[in-house]
Amino acid sequence: MTFSGDLSFVNDWNFFMRNPAQRFENLVATGAYAGTLEAFATGVKLKSRYEHLLDDALARKQTTFWASGSKRVIETAKYFGAGFFGVDWQDFADLQVIPETRKRRTSTLTPGKTCRKYGDNADGNGHDYGARMLYEWRGHYLPPIVARLQRENPGISFTEAHVYSMQELCGFETIALGSSPWCDVFTKEELESFGEQLGMYFDHSYDPELTFLHVEYARDLLHYYKAGPGNPYSGAMGMLWLNATANLLKEGPEKAGSLFLSFVHDGDITPMLSALELFPQSIDLPTTHVLRDRMWKTSDVIPMGGRIIFERLACAAPQYCWDNAEFGYPNHKYCTPPAEEYHVRINVNDGIVGLPGCEDGPGRSCPLEIFMGRTSAAITQEAHNRELHFRHSFFSGGCHRSPIVATLVTEHRLAQPFRCVPYRIVFQQNSVIAMGQSIGTVQAKAVTGVLAQLRDVHGTLKTNDSLPEGILTIWTDKGRESAELIVSETLTVWWQTKGKVGECGLWWRCLGGRQMRQRVFRMRPGKETSLNLIKIVSAKLKGRSA
Image (tube, rainbow, N blue to C red; front, top):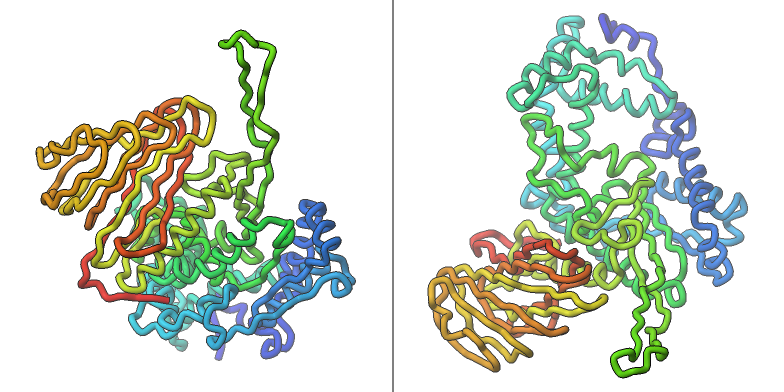
């Protein structure tokens, strides 16, 4: 078989790796972009950055690190260990290998192996979902390239799968050798032509310099729907590792230790990113055209050697002082004792990424207490989704076929004066069953007049009045106020702050349930935010669980 045209180099081409049967799917050990080199260099870099934590871990003899049971993952961990702990790392650290098997049930490192519905792909939206969406995209951009190669080589039959594999070889051979002749098979002119097909989707002309725009997008689609935010099982799988990590951050270095290192596949990192909603998409990635302004880019999120670091920051808490000047003793000054506040900061591939809605702390960090509350709420949310699945957000809660008890709380955690004002609450097709005791002044008014009798409430009121769409306004005038309501379907709360920067809190649970879910958020004066607390989706949807 002889190749012609842009594929003529294949006649003399040899596979870029010796003993390919032995090295296939293993860590690349040659070239400027070798995985072995990058893993070692990363270990050296992080040792320089976190040397004080390493010293503490060595002193405590808490230097165990973990890798999933894949040969290339284990090798990556070992090369990293040589750079981080030293070439004699085995004298100081212990590498624990966790088998990649479904028998482990709830492995935090490889959740895709332990989520049976995801692995079985019974509903078509599990492990193979990403490949299916990739095939759809390939059908849009590859046919012109297949046709050209077919014209140059009329005696050889090409398929879209063949051409896509050529594009993959371009990337993998470049990693191993620094360059690849496979990259020259694909021309800018073809991409210009492809850009004309995309013209209807863009507000400006296609840029031919974006040579591998569509190839990059193919990878983005694959990971987005395989185990990223586009996969309905992703968030549940990501909660396993996130929950374990959150508990370690809560315990702190004194109890848990200073360093925890885990090595996994890229497809095991994306579920955790989904659970945190770090790279949110307003719309799912389409398979008919390139979505240019997307947040989800594989090259940014999970490049080869990608890493996610959670940092626990200890910062001095502000001190508050006062005196007795109003009583005639101005020289008597009192201050709160020195204290520390703890925050969580997220580093993605050497870039700080703020947690959506919670990045006002030092260095775009999130207060540890709020981080724990959000993690707990997300875990509870995923548990409820076992009965009724729907695309969730961190601050939604689902009570399947059951009302909820919502407690609205305003609490002053920072300097006075500060007020969290839940100034509007909207019910949609609900029944208010009861309003519990409230402290201070609670006023309510319904636009439809249904809740007119709730004005100036001080105590308990019960009603079964139907609320097709009512608006209840509540505000409080003390440091900590609450009003309890029981509603059945959708509750949206609008918050407004007055005074200095502070935190507003909201807790809720399903009627008859014990688990409280929490949403605490930091706000600045004069700004508003809304929280869609409960969203019950049609019971006709089939339940899915991990």
